[in-house]
Structure formats: structure tokens, C-alpha cells
Length: 292
Ligand SMILES: C[S@@+](CC[C@H](N)C(=O)[O-])C[C@H]1O[C@@H](n2cnc3c(N)ncnc32)[C@H](O)[C@@H]1O
Image (cartoon, rainbow, N blue to C red; front, side, top):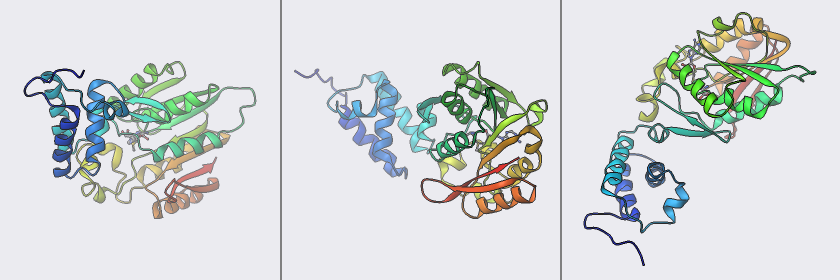
């Protein structure tokens, strides 16, 4: 026999239907899926479990908290920000409003960076993750390679604190050092095997026109790459070789397409060798690498 439904209580089915209508009206493109995720997040269960239990009801307290989460999403706050986490390379990263929500395409940056890591030759390897944000790249690299230490750098102390929290929560803090500094200023004494970066790369003029989840909620410092989006990549091209061992590599994410070609050109002109471009899963040239 099902649980008795108190007057005023709504089933999951009804809650989800109402939330989906609200989110659709707010222009959220994935309204139903987001409604399910918000309910799952509130209850600490998987989305599939929500879908399998549509006759269950919420207590008044939980219903109010669900309505609050739906209101936030209707204001176009990113789903992951409301949930407080995102999965990246199989790891659960905690998020705050100080960090970019990790994007799936950046998983391909990690994959390529791992493939380009020089052969260890019996010693520990060192990677620098520049603009670490949530620490997603640093944590993914360290969790994949136990012979790798990572220095995770971000100019934002608040972002650096999130990265450190994630490294600790994932049991990786003994191999990830987090530094709050501009570019490579905090690591002048290090020789790395790999420098990886998903820098802010959007042309300044484009930021305001992006979807509200990005333009209104992501930290400007994580998005704005200057007039052509290439300011940080240009600075890295100029200084990163001095921080790499002879066989070391630099791998960066770009906005894709023409910007990837421009970044490759920048690297070549700055004296990087074996400069290569790699496409993302959508087939768009997006990642650029060069050897020291
Ligand atoms: C696009 S986000 C990437 C965050 C994370 N690595 C990811 O892939 O989701 C860029 C990050 O670079 C940081 N950043 C911007 N300018 C920087 C600088 N000059 N030095 C170090 N970090 C910087 C930002 O604070 C932001 O966290």
C-alpha cells in the first residue's frame, strides 16, 4: 500500500511537472532533466531513483527547499552551482561561485595532456595546472597518474581555496600543491614536465552576450581573455618554456576554430616546437600543444 498523501502534499510526478513548467517558462533548455536533477540533489539520490519513484511525496520543508532550488534555476543560475558539484573525469568536484563549472570538453584536454606526458624515466613527474579553478584538471591528472605531482595555480585566492578543498576531499592533497598567484609567478623555482591550462579565452566583447548561466554567474576572471581572447595564452607562450624541462610540453584549451589556429601560430612564433592542434568531441579544433 502506498504512503498516505497529506492534503497539500504533491507527488514527485506533480512536483516535477510544476517545476518543468516553471523552468520552461524561464527559457531553460533542459527543463525536465534539470527539474529531476534538482529533486535528486535535494534528496541526495540519483536522478534515476527520482524517476523510478514518481508517486513519492515531499515533506513541506523539502517541498519549500525544492521550490527555492527551482526558483534559482529559473533565474538561470547554473544547475551545477545549485547542486554544488559537478562530475569531471569520474571525480565529483565541489563548486562555489568563485569557480567555473567544469565543462565536458575539458576532459579531452586532460586526456591529451596525459598522452603527452614525457616518459618518467624512474623519477616523479611534475605538472602545473594554470588557472585551476575548481582544481578539476589538477585532480583528474593526479588521480590518473600516481607518479605525478601537480601544482595547481589560480590568481583568485577564493578559487584556489576551492581547488584545495577538492584535492583534500578526493584524497589527493599530498600530491597537489595549490598556489594563489598570477600566471607562473608563484612557481619560479620549479621545472615541470607538463603545463596544462584551460585559461580564460573569450574575447571581452562576447562575454555579455552569452547565455545567462555563463554571463551572469560564471566569474568574469574565468571567462574574459582580453580583446581577442588570447591574452593569457600569449603570456603563457612567452614565459612557460622557462618553467619546463627540455622534453616538457604545454597543452592549452582555446575557444576553438580560428582561435585554436591563432594560438598555434602564437606558440610557433614564440619558438615552441612540434606545435599541434587537436579537435574536441564535436570535431572543432580546440586544443593546442607545443614542446619546449
Ligand atoms: C576558464 S577557467 C578554468 C578553470 C578550470 N581549470 C576548468 O577547466 O574548469 C580559468 C581560470 O583561470 C584563472 N585565471 C585567470 N587569470 C589568471 C592568471 N593571470 N593567473 C592565474 N590564473 C588565472 C581564473 O580565476 C579561472 O579560475
